[in-house]
Length: 457
Image (cartoon, rainbow, N blue to C red; front, side, top):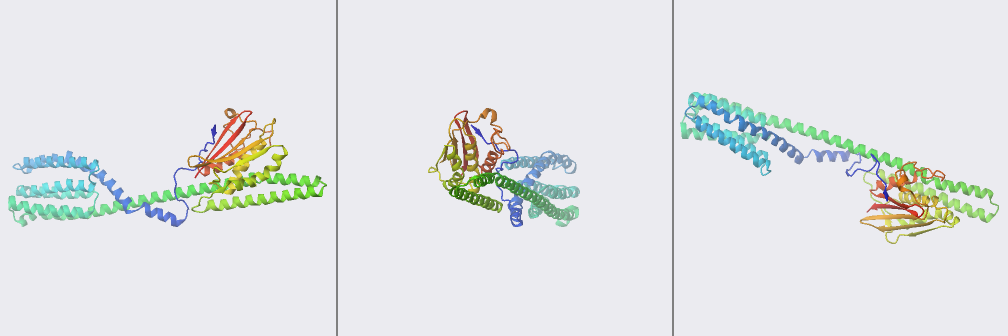
């Protein structure tokens, strides 16, 4: 058994996107892409990247400042060093919890930034007076570094600043009892000024980052919109190509019948026979007109932004297609039997179903065995959520090992002595695969062939 294989670049992709190409639809996609939720996720991602660098600073840089403490506060440096190491361990533990997904990056920043700020506030409250300026400068440097590293709202920096100042004042009353004027004179005022600037830097950096993310997301949304439009244009072009091939191929049979009818009318001298031939020609013309109308209707439906699925009655389409072949089959002593009771409808437009069924039946008649009249069976059934339409003949069969690869190839004719363009099976495969279905073939040399079309519901 051979299945019709999708061609590279031709099979419909599994991605289902709304791609009408209309400005309204693209604006909706843009708004959905640059949404507060998407922005929050992007900010959280950036925050986690910043958290990794904060961990690096807390473990490798922050404890090393104990050497600075030893030179400025020799009486307190061991206490300060122990606090720095404890804070580094706390930051490392918080980062592990962050990576496990139990806390957000914002919580991690509070643990790291507030912990360091409270420690330095303690140092500023207990360090010798001559070292206060250096510690307040380090305090301000912490806030400036946080403004450049952390990705969060400036309100959080204000909260940390307020808590730090309150802790500084409280611990000064407990340990040093210095006048606030002395603290301000020895670097406290400079610290407040620089810390305030750091809060403004936090806001500026966050606003810049938000604009950068929104611009990138907008660019990605525009790129996806272009991809959707290109995909829609590709589908439209494929549908146009399919339409052109369907018109040229499906009208070939009625035109051939009209040519034969004209020749028969010219040769016949019996008026009743001429009238019968003219009536048959009229039916052929009407059938051809219906075919064109159905193909045009399907092309118009497929071009709509959201085409609704369409189904066809198998018996109705078969009656029309079979009527066009009935005379040829009877003339060579063959027969066609159809049974659609197990599955009366299929998810194909009438014009497409007529093309599929017409091509399969025409091939069954053309490639009949020279040793016996054609016996063709057309059946339908349900099969795992799909409608299965099969056309079985008793013809000469196909050597699938030799000719299987060119069976569904465009212009891939198997027997050149038989009239045809080699487009019929290619068109059948194209139509069915565009609807998400498959075409299968089973054949035995000298016994016959079965073509099976599956179209999902």
